[in-house]
Length: 183
Image (cartoon, rainbow, N blue to C red):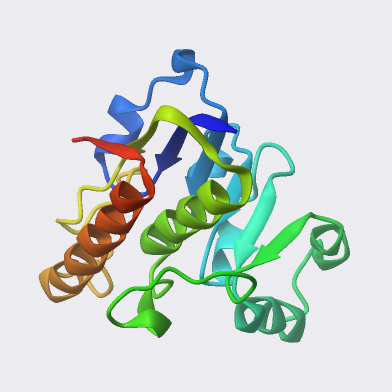
């Protein structure tokens, strides 16, 4: 049963606020975070994450089947090694009942929240279980590494992602999690 989970997303505050000394049951890293922090799970929705941000350890990869097919089609370096990683596909098992059910994994940060929802249902939670969110800034053009991407990290995107993030946090709270955002 789970008592504490950290989700470390890609917002600039992640680098400053994540506290590795807390001793979480699970650490879920989003996109490039497993290259900086030891994580149990690695959530990514774009195949380029594997090339740009290889993880420090071999976490369980949580992604879509389409992402895996794209990775295979691009003949990536270390593809054979990645095939040995443990994996769980977004499409497997129960799906969070979001308003736009097929969109909950549109972004890696929201996919991580969906993973927490799935793991809570599969493994159970202790009373008072908490999820700590780091790097869920959902604003600005820079990520946790300080890299600006003004094409992808736009206010239009953040507006859509904020709504879905809030909906997924609400679903986690219905399941019994206390969700705490560190910003």
